[in-house]
Length: 547
Image 1 (tube, rainbow, N blue to C red):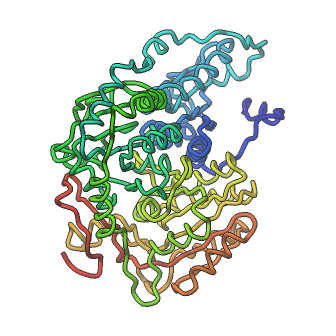
Image 2: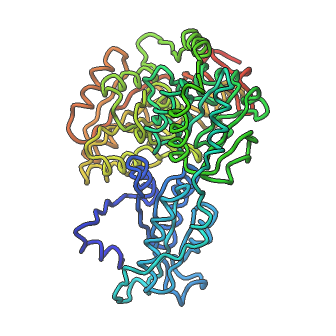
Image 3: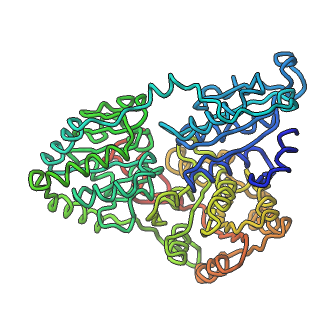
């Protein structure tokens, strides 16, 4: 309470009140993902603090800088099982980059400064500060210039790469015939350097889910997303490559599938700021532990100086990949008047000129948003990648709308994910945030249904979200949720009405919910089954046939 009381007297800090602590931590993540600056959230002791856990784990896995401040029982009561006591420092130790229990009020200025520095430096991540109630109630004259005590951490931060390492990479590039860039979330702050590197070398770029937007999707050299639901041509390029340049990535299982089969013909160059990621899943031939921005600047400098020596020509390789693009584009089928969910995202992409900030929940709609919306800039795409936390989309859009009031912010959500934090509609209304919600409503947990169709003989195991006694009706009525929070809303179920409905959503000032009814039989394709390789890719079929 003391911290909230103090916030009412601040003229510089804006406090946005979420209706659930999980909404608050996801909104802080949305703020950080959209702006690149640390997001901050606050929660009370006990259940308030434990409600932050999913968001902290999500930020840890996706390297998102956030600072979470929690209340705690008075120091003398810690360890006595007092009312609303939870040892949140212990609970979150493995899912935060660092955490603090404040035991001396004099330490607060230093701890807060350290927390923000830790969250943003090196590999970014979440930091938690736990403040006991009696500390909050003390009066103190703060010492703002207290130095940070992070000598051990600072000594372990990676040094800039040396020229000999970078020249070795340039030599490997000049010797290769089929190089591919595999870029991830680590490249989001190095977009300019990455574009320059691609301009000089002509190497095609495949992106992870987290890396979308670091290289423009509209560029001819963009292969879009690779991995389980990546494009055929991105996965083909990695499979056939003789040199894989892995920049700011961690060889996640959803990208690699069967590790032995992933890039099995290629020499691997791995650059990452976290030494723990190098060689963790896939052993590189050349590795640099360091900041990708500094490494790319160094590579670009060497390439500019030695352009005549490098003599790079990957024209035949690019033609081979262009043929794959032509033969295996991302596509979908239409069935009568039903709205294909992929088409809804395509129309949104057209009507926003590809310039919106997109947040998502987790599931089929998330993968379609990754495939069919074209991201040309970093920090346009906000999604829960590593943790796959349903309920992320709506609160993340809140954070993005606060961080980027100039931008169009659209939450592309599924009915399952949307209902997990539906209470944040109240926050959106009260704060008057212009968040648009494109709800792809198929009345099911769509991604689980897809796996049931493919691998469990279409046996439905608690994946239907409607009312079994009234299957012909849409349940729950999402428009009523919006109405309860005084947010304009509409429903569309015919493909012919879709474009006008999305245009109306975008034209309406303030928040808006568009409930788009889509068939539950649709499958996200292509799909490489978990633990499979490129040769196992599925490109055909949906829930309308048996397997």
